[in-house]
Image (cartoon, rainbow, N blue to C red; front, side, top):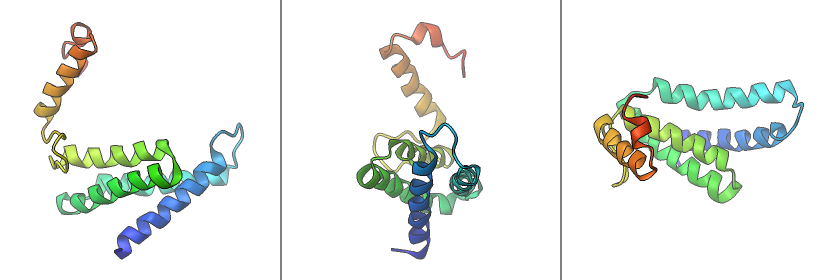
Length: 130
C-alpha cells in the first residue's frame, strides 16, 4: 500500500470514529463536530484542487474507500460520500473507470432523460430544471 493510500485510510478510520461519536446525538461535542468537518474537508478540497493526473489516483482510492466503508464498517453515508467524490472527478475530467459510466455531460443528459421517462417524470422535467 502506498504511503498516500495508507494516509487516506488512516483518515477514513478517524472519520468513522468521529462520525460514530456525533451521529444520532441531540447535542454532540463541538470539538468532535469540528474534527469530523475538517476530515471531510480534506477529501473535499483534495477533490476540488486535483489536476487530471491526480484524479485517476483519487478516483481509484475513493472507490477503495467506498468499498471499505461498505464492507468493513457498514457505513452507507460514507459509501455515498466517497462514491460521490469519485463521480465528481469522473465527470470533471471525463474519465470512465467502469463500462456503465458516462464520460460527458451529453451522455449523462441522454441517460438522465431516459431515467425521467422511466420514472414517469419526463413531462414534468423537460430540461427546464437544468
